[in-house]
Length: 422
Image 1 (cartoon, helix red, strand yellow):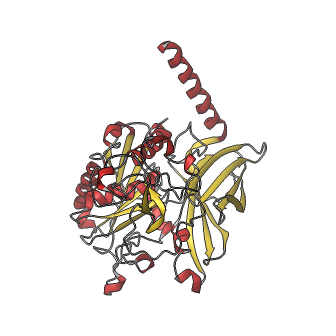
Image 2 (image 1 turned 90 degrees about the vertical axis):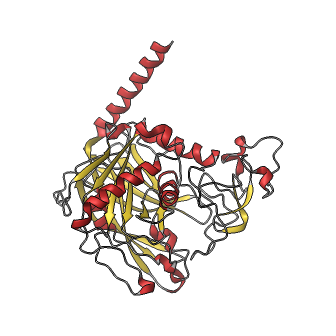
Image 3 (image 1 turned 180 degrees about the vertical axis):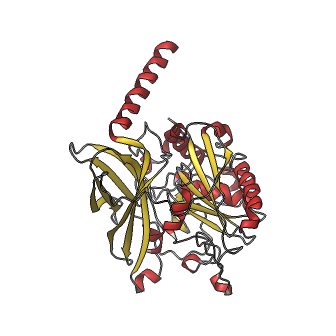
């Protein structure tokens, strides 16, 4: 029986590998575009195409199965109109649309999607969720891989350092760690920080049980100055990928809108996820699903921040806290089921963790310590205390706590690990 199962798995692997080889090269096509809009509307415009030397994603799981995030892009073989690749993601622009600034002005963000480099002509369709959470087509581009305007130029080339090399990127979850605010003389410090923070990740379940399924690369890319921008304090630093506190005027929100430089640096290694470590001791960080994650290097809560933010970026986990100031307005409409696996408005709870709730557990579940440690439906999450529910009394997505992901979050992380490492 075991031999039969092994043979079937091998046949499936050969078939999926053949599908990849039929359509793609072992390299990446990077599509840069501009996303422009305000709180009510948005538009797309094409920027540039770049061929990058690595493909870090799976060669078996080419179609997204999660339907997470705000956006989706789909790659079709132009001749047959066969869907050959898809991925869901979110961006800084989608968060900005929920701020007060977006009510007052129009703004443009640089964004990027990446797919395996095609052998033949493709059609790429961009979709976004409408107010009801349904994906709708927004933009389309046709691409000929033989187009000589596809750039092969490498702008920001730096050495990569192997923090953890577990094997072929096609069957591993690949993280590229990028420094910001580390000068040339601080590169040794960055490598030490990258090793330390990688260790933090594997202190938490389910990452520690799956350590052999990860690759982690650190890019030795120095900045001109040490530190990061703190606009509210009048501090500005010349750093490689332009991180800044006070993103959306929230002091602790540490992000960057320098998309192109970030992607150019990331291209020095195969990657599924980008993680930026910022050389500062001030508390802060941030992350967006399949976009990038950020944490600070020296804060006492660094271990929590690193794992918490990676939960957003890697598994689309939502914030479960509800007593913190944010710049968002109606981030989770109460008549729409959130796409995050650990949040619900009970609009369609059947697709969430309902099968993990015990038959004797009340729904909603009282926010009482006696229910700590069980899976329930606790009101308060997604930045509001009413109408949005979380699966656990406490979790690393709710409070500053280490190795405390609840069963629902652990299951979501495990599914994503399995997807990337098939």
